Amino acid sequence: MQQAIMLPPSPDERWKVARQLGVESAVVRFWGVDEWWTYETLMKTNNRFADHGFSLNVVEDRPPMEKTVLGKPGRDEEIEIVKQLLRNMGRLGIDTYCWVWTENPLGVIRTSDSVPGRGGSRTTGYEHKWTERQEEHPAASITESELFENLQYFLDEVVPVAEEAGVDMALHPDDPPMSPIRGIPRIVKSVEDYERILSMYDSPNHGVTFCQGNFAAMGVDIPETIRQFRDRIHFVHFRDVDGTPDSFVETWHDDGPTDMKAAINAYREIGFDGAIRPDHVPEMESDNRSQSETGQLNDGLLFATGYIKGLME
Image (tube, rainbow, N blue to C red; front, top):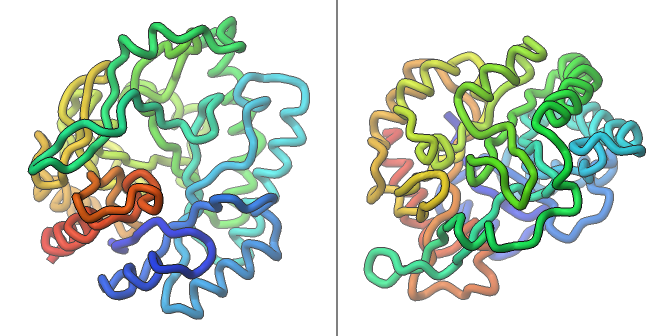
C-alpha cells in the first residue's frame, strides 16, 4: 500500500507537512485550476510533485460531467474531455482516476460542519431531514433507470480508453449513500449497486474507490466487503462514520465503529498495492479553518497519518 495525502497541484505548506510526515505518494485535486486535464498542465503537475519527492499516483477530480450524468445534449463533448484526461494520465504514468457519478461534481453533501467531536474537535455530519426541506433539484425528473442508461453509455465510451491508457478508474460511492436527494436518484449507494455497475462493463480497469466511511454508513462488514471487491479496489479513503445513511457524523480514525486494524489486514490479504489516504479528518483547536480544506489537510491529519502508518507497520 502507498500511504498518500491529498494535495493541491502547486507547492505550499501542505506539501512540506506531507513530506515531514514521511509521505511520498500524492493524490491531487485541482482546486482553482481551469482545464487541468490537458497534457501540459498534467505534465507540469506530475513533474512538480516529482521535483519535491512525491509520486503522483491518483487524480481525484472530475471535469464537468453534469450533462453526461443527466443524459443531456453536449455529453459527448464532456466524455471526450474525460478520454483526453485518461490518455494524458497514461502518457505520464499516473495510475488511478477517482471519479463520482452524480450531477454534483464534488458528490459530498453535508448539513453541518461543526459537530462537536472528541475533546471539542470539530467534525462534519449529515441529517437528511434538512436536505428534505430544500427545493427539488432542477433535474429531479430524471429516473434511476435513466441514470443507469447514461452510465452504461459513459462506460462503453470511456473504459476502453482507460484500458488502452493503462489507467484504473475508481468509482467513489455516493456520499451520503442514500436516494433520492433533492428529488434525484443516486445509484452508487450500496454493495448491490456496485455489483451491478461493475458488471455493466467487466474490466479490471473499471473498479472501486473503497471509501470506508460510505461503506460503513451502508451497514456492511468492512473487512468482508474489502475481500468481496478484492480485484476491483483501486484506491482507498481510510475514514469512518458513526450512524446510518440518513444520519451520521464523521469520527476520529480510532474512535468509530469500524475495526480499522481488521480493515488494514484485509487490504494486505487481498494484495492491495494502491494509494490509501485519510479523509474527512476532524479539525483540532489549533486548526485554521480557512486553510484546512474541510479536513483534507489539517492538524488532525497528523494524527490520522500516524495512525494509519502504525496500523500498516
